[in-house]
Length: 130
Image (cartoon, rainbow, N blue to C red; front, side, top):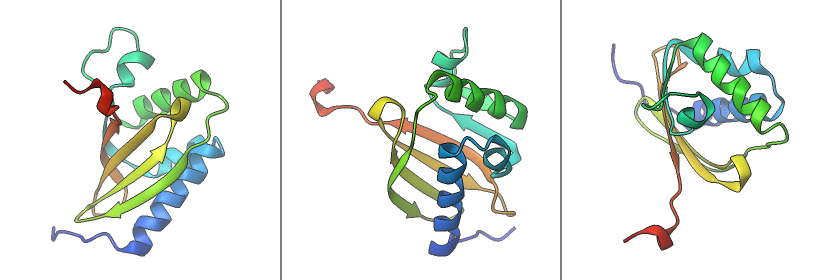
């Protein structure tokens, strides 16, 4: 299939749906944003799931379980988007997340504009650099 440039409108709509779903605890609306082939890579998965070491959550049922566990662990969490970046078949959301952490999620889209892959990254304080 030809590569798709994510438009500003598409990026903003997807980011708004993602934010509203998370902050409203609407799991069905949140899961609907993801394709069946979803691969979600986050170091937080190793904390949320015991004995996980690779940070990979794959498939919609596992993603639902992961998100539910996150909501149970941080029930009052409200995300706040700071910046949105758009690109070729991708968008990046920079936001404040769990316990005030600054995160970004690089979301790769499939041809149906569903999220098929996510790289979730956490900001590291410069004071920890060597």
